[in-house]
Image (tube, rainbow over the protein chains, first blue to last red):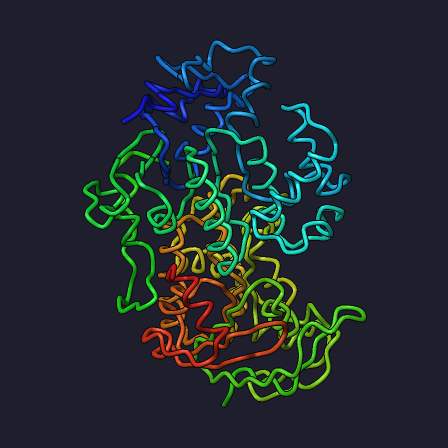
Length: 278
Length: 244
């Protein structure tokens, strides 16, 4: 195995409250190669904060500490804002949950994707245009020339998310963090969007961190899964081994989900006191 | 008797017709689901039944009596709705007690304190939540309040618009169990809108698959469980859920 893309050791994120600092991520460690890692957990488990701290997107008064937060030999915690801007988007990029709020409403789709590209590379205008069309094509948008001229309110949610993905992948980053990329989308569109992410990540040999609350979805699209609860990783397993998960929290989550061929009269409910969680 | 009957129902928002020619009959005590993707008109049907989308033609009858357009006190005694987002559907400046008492005050029902206490117990909330504000409650607790508010008038029919899609998996399980228990205890009729087929399998008896404002298929939940849906679009939805 090659050197890991990302090494995280003892990551802690905390925020001040009236009753002292509250840690939302409590000593998280993992390494990521050019593979697909899933982080699963419920609201408040710290999964999104983990994703954000890798990009150093947690603002004061939030505090991020780690023994090691290393991306391809770069110590992320040591970088200043200017250096971080050269990494964000170009080398690590992030797809957020809802395209409605993450696309700029007053720029056309084409302009926004172009902005993502020319911020990091100097290219002749004609090449930029060609790259945009090619990228929109790669995210399976028919008629990319027309879509590039549209404004965000003129496209559907699923298309908006595909545009986000195009924008995030056009600078060819080495690591993509997808934070609930499909939870704002319809079931029928979810699979399409994830298939696109999956295909592009595999073809370009990138690393992927997929953050989601949906265990089944993550197990389908990832190689390895971290299950988080109240800031801790409670279980790490290969995606195929999810059904054999050991920790009571993971087992509880799996059992609490109704299945398509449901025969149980009542769904088992997590006993929260067991983990002293929220 | 049918709890809800829709005959040749068309619903419009302004000049745009969004629901076309719906015919549905939901028996009393039945739990019926409308499934389909965003924009297929499933929530609009619920809104029309509740009186929130008054621009419709055709006929809606509830417990055997035709419904007028617009808000109708008699209908709201029989039909109540629970919305998707418990963060948006409770008044932020009103205590839980105020939110639960309001429907009683509107309909001139007495004995309010006792009714509120009994309802909190029925939805599994401790009495200490009674004088709190919505922001002091978690998402699951708020959805319990929203369900309690809908049940205050002892309706026969509950319209549920994606009641669990804004909630975590483990909280979703609690709310689904609660809905199932309440339906059993109070003999309620459910009309549920969702895009989550496993939820339909857990909670419902029949389902209608909708696409672009039309019902494409009505099936029994047994057919859903066996994967025996007839129309290509329904099968597509099923495949997307199971992950192909």
